[in-house]
Image (cartoon, rainbow, N blue to C red):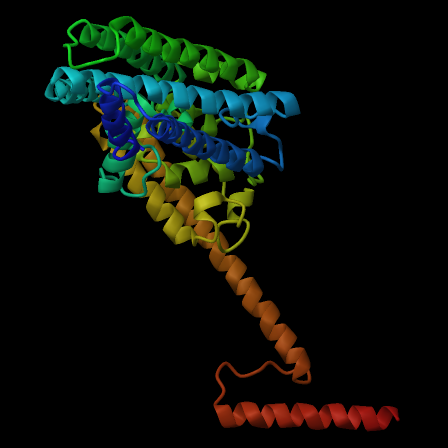
Length: 416
């Protein structure tokens, strides 16, 4: 959409502005390109919201602090989807018109320079907001190429032309910054386009007033569509589209409390450990993480079997060794903390993990020994009350099977 639909539509529109009698086909091509791009982006956002909605079907979306925007009322749902389509189409149209304005006055290089400057400003804001350039969900403790490409570059670029609704998430822009970036871009598009139309030459056949009215119409439609989108959004989630100031670290902190239980998690500890292993440590609030570790006990549901329960998200089925290795690896990130209170809490947390690990390993060993004893007892009962030897050759095993068969046959004959 950004690299193909936008430039193509802008070039066609620039030709249209210089045409004496533009054909209906050219006009249709421009409008349809922008509308299709708006529909694709709206459909992508709705699909993402539907997926989040279905993922919370077990406990209900209200039990999750973030998802989802989709209302349950049928009429509002239709209004939400139509408003989203209208918003993306009109918003993209203002971007296309601004691009056209630069093309017509021969100042395209200044547009790219301005976008680059704005990109650097947004990166600075994100760095201040998150204290890192990492994306929240990252398995490695370093900045990956995918993080840079998808969550820093592409989402920032898309915010200028086709905003991605998950950009409202606290771990990306957050609701307030998401809205302010849209508002800024909309006002900037109008101002820049008006400045460009003021220096149109005689080769441009569309009048200055007509061009400005076209831009104003698209800008007003964008604003109306966004207000309609907010009105149709689930009431408990509307604030996320314009006023939410929750940061990524603040959002993650809520997963370490008993404020809510979401997804398929059975306990709050499962939810907290899943967030810990899947979240980049730069987004993990140390105090919340440490206090959660300090209250863990070996007899909780998380350690009730030899592996992590299947309802524990990304770490489901992990061995306890792997889990504790990951927790210790995450904890190492906080060695950089300098204040005395944090250092003390860090050492307490580190010692607590070591103690807890030993208790869980001992518990696992006892559980495994008990299982072996039960298995030997069961096998011994099949073998006539005598325990089976520790190791058997294939020939010995076959002999044992034949003896069991003979014993079963004798019992059947005796019964007959």
